[in-house]
Length: 260
Image: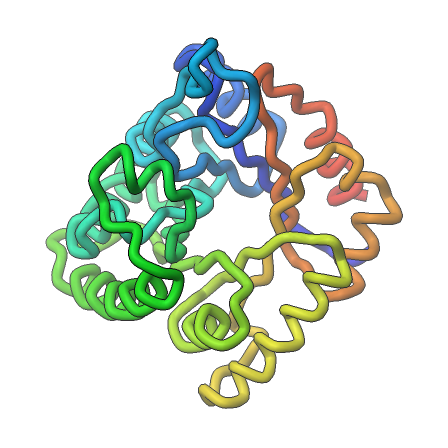
């Protein structure tokens, strides 16, 4: 089995701050390579508290706390919605949290999709093409602002782009990203990865410069056959999502496979 990285995404819904902090501390102590949250304002699943909403916390605020609670894992939001923050502000936030973490932040970003967030918080939802156009403009502005900030980021602050849109998103990955995230199953990941290689060729980019990560949403995805299937099609970093009560036993299984 090829060498790979292990990450965990802690879903900041139907939980308490204390439980989230305990979970990311445990994950860091276990030796995961990365710890993530997400960028939404309402739960994405579950029964809620009777009105369909339920407890939920904002992702970048949590990431700042995670930065000072942990010591070794890389940290990020998987992925930040470009629509929710001015790109210069986002660059500054990422740089600041990067310093809090000692240089461990990954700036994950995508075009956004969860309409309820937009409606409830007063953002214009637009269309998928308009959100992608905004993302493309923001990526250049984020990079420009990162180059102007004083002090600069403490670490490399790689940019990850999430999504699998073949015409635009994967072109933006080829042009701008240090890492790319999409979903399974392995055959879906393989197909999108092949398109990414085509976009890299068009952009004159070495595809080996882009780390390929996959978001896993079920504990069954960590069995040996499935892990091997992802690795066979080029996945380098497996990130398992965990909701409250944050059972990390499947993450331990991934770590054992990584370390064998």
